[in-house]
Image (cartoon, rainbow, N blue to C red; front, side, top):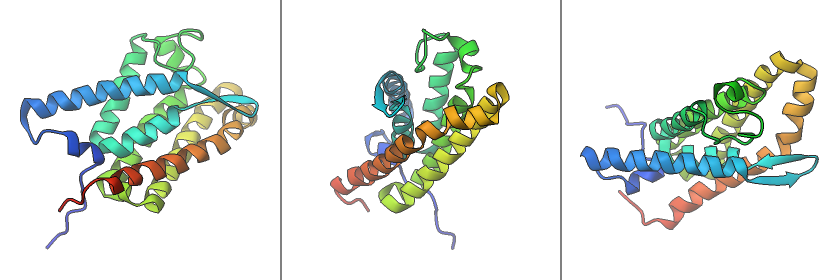
Length: 197
């Protein structure tokens, strides 16, 4: 007998079982997720020589709470809002808007956010969101993949040396802190809930 490998993510506790109500709730959650992503992109924390946004933390938390499908859908909706010219990204509207901004220096990181959500959402769907160490490992892999995508895109624009120096190194410590924080918060939320069969 095969054992099911998929569990329900945290957000499933708030979803109606089926029908139009479930779809409407998922849509509202996705929109709320894009608002959180926008707010996190505009919130800057000064940590050393660069300002760091809370966006990576928001992506990790959304993916862990929403699971693979809704998490990725939320990130794709966010990207669509940005592509349509809404000022949802960290540097918009000051540094441009729409597709032109998305193809700029942050393009690889933005695409990496979607992949990050997929990796963490996949892990959450398998119950890793209940275990801090497992979730940390999944989030760390997602972080490395996102940073690699950002680095690769930026390296095409300004060269690998500058890309590493300005696009990766300044963010390592801050992003590790965000990974550790997210990997602690989601299992903590599960531990506060009554046990379900």
